[in-house]
Length: 149
Image (cartoon, rainbow, N blue to C red; front, side, top):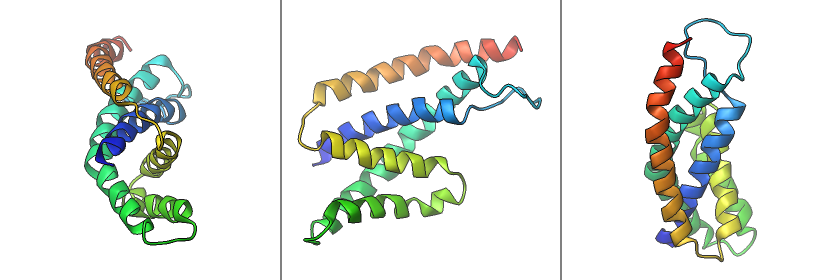
């Protein structure tokens, strides 16, 4: 079960990083911009979100999901609904700070439901290292784009 949660964490964090950087681009130029959806803002959001989402999903999301599975295993009726509600309500303290953790928690639940019966160990490992490489190479590119603004 733990290996499946780690696979889910990699897939959910990757999808969440891409989705959130498009939905909520970050403007770090210091100026109010009418163009939120510029390449620089989306790239800045992607590098920022990737770091925090991966850390948050592995430190907070995986243990919460394991606890949710343990609790829902005791309920004979509607275990997926109870698990979904547990995933959503477990991030309420984080939701008070921002709405992104709620989106990531729902994405984690959905990805786990999609890959529950399958095994993607090699794909998850490849994706984790690919995201690490992408993040490492985009960080200097992001800084050079921000300097040229």
